[in-house]
Image (tube, rainbow, N blue to C red; front, top):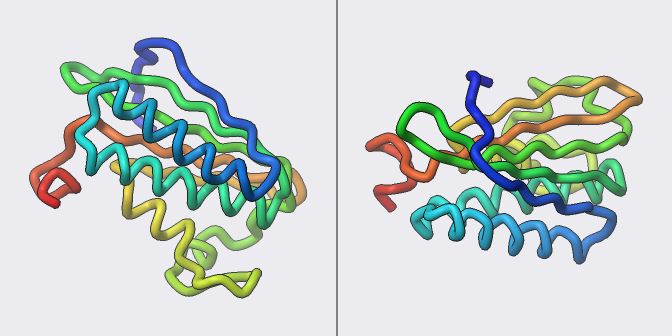
Length: 148
């Protein structure tokens, strides 16, 4: 991740069950709107967050999402860091492939989340958990979600 600067108060969502997935989506959507994101970009971030929160519930049972507003020069955005202490991901490259699933799902959660945000990072230590960092800028590049 490039060196962005925190620019205000953040929000935290604890994920421990299926109902928390919807709460995470709602919370991050409202947060993005409050940070003056266009609706399409707010929905994209919220959808990516819900995919990550769902993965936490399915694979790790519980985790935490923390979001903070950031600035980088004249642009502003939101960074979301999702952490769990689950079993981790043995093969991140394989897990990022469309259609790959260890739990019988469509296998589009991680790869879909990556496509919905401007920056995506994933780190995992088997037996210790996963950390995923999502960055969404309030305004994107010409070929981004702003054109939807």
